[in-house]
Length: 116
Image (cartoon, rainbow, N blue to C red; front, side):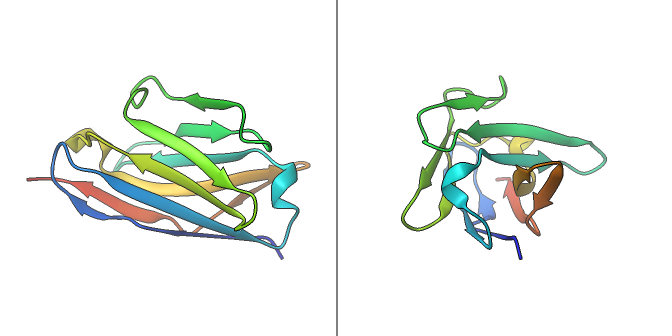
C-alpha cells in the first residue's frame, strides 16, 4: 500500500534551517508529482511546493519562494524540502502528498516550530 513517511521536523530559531524528508513506498514513485503542504494551528492546509516526476519542474507558494527548495531522489524514493531563513510564520505541521488517479495520499505530518 502507498506509504509516505515524513521526518526532519523540529524546533528552529528564526533565520535557521531545517530539511524535511518524505520516504515513499508502495507505488511507482518516479511517475508522480510530489508535494509538500503545511497546516498552521487554526488554518487550512496550504500547498507549499511541488515537484514533477522528473524533478525538472518545481513550484512554490509565494510565501516561501527564495527560501525553500523541493527536490527528489529517484533512487531513494524520497522527496525533500530544504527550508532556509525560517520565519515564525513557517510554524506548522508539514505533510507530504501525492495524487494517484483520483486518490490523494498523505503522510502523518511532521511538526516544524520556528521560535526564539
